[in-house]
Amino acid sequence: NNYSYQMYTTNTGKLRIDLSTTGTTYANIVSTASLTAGVWNHVAATWNGSTVKLFINGVQDASTLSFSGTLFGAATTVDIGRVSGSNNQMYTGQIDEVRVFNRALTSLEILNTMNSTLSGNENGLKGYWNFDDGTAGDLTPNNNNGALFGNAAITLPNVEFIPPVDTVLVADTNIVMVRLIKTGLPFGTFNFPAYLTSNDPLNTQIIIPGSLYIDSLPP
Image 1: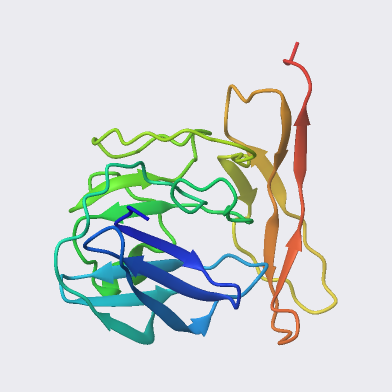
Image 2: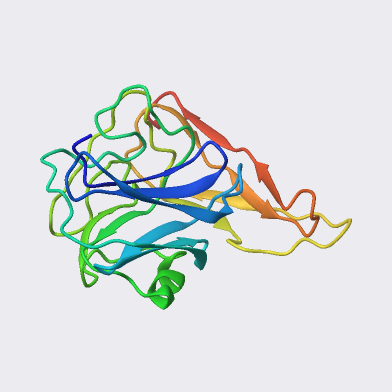
């Protein structure tokens, strides 16, 4: 209780958002489409003061919700990856490029920016966390900086794949180089999976795990 809104996935793989004007009762909307497990999904929700819309991978979902009023002014922190204030309702998976606006983005704005990083000064952007600097710092001038708790960890930022995008023909081979463009990495293990998109309808994405272990400073 006592939160304004929350977005999460249901146990059936749907996207859901709850909103409240009181902090005790909630209106909710659940997507018609399902998310795809094991691959990156882009999700977004907008509210223009009267209608809530959901977007999955840049496509507006068929579900909409009529909702009006003023969101409950919860005096709590924004939690990414868990239900607010709960230590037993954690998200298992990876989250990146978290953005909070104080206005409803258009479907075209969502589509045009879903695969791009932001400058941090976009119109209405109140909080932006892309974790590329290895922290949960806010990249807007609002300084809504976060902190990691529990087992939360940031995978290796600023890894460059060369070439970044390529096509592999049937029965062909390809070499992809991985270049680290981050200095000052702490000791430990960092992961950088490569995602291959396949035209096989039974296996549309192949994940090739990669990792780097740093055990000492260079000589």
